[in-house]
Amino acid sequence: MVCGYGCSDHASATRSGYQSAFIYEADIEYNDIHSTLDVMSVLSFDHMLQHSKMVVGFAYELGTTEGL
Image (cartoon, rainbow, N blue to C red; front, side, top):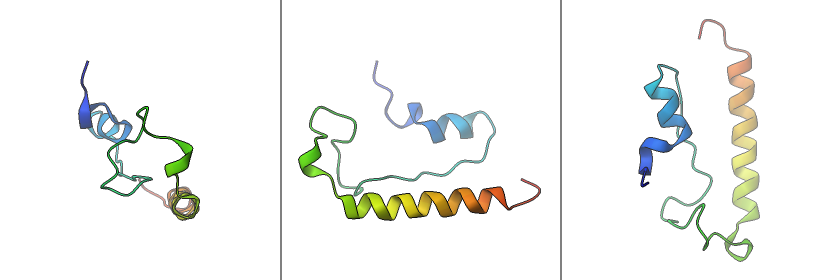
């Protein structure tokens, strides 16, 4: 089964009527994510740190916002 974008978690949330965001943890040109070519030697720990900081900030914002 080939899903593409439609099987992503944020697409599923949007389709179900929930607000969602597309946060991609790799360079957008990197097409091997979640494949057998997605190996430790190509990881960017600096990029993962930046992504983690953004996720924590996003979760904080959601937790302090009323009326969503």
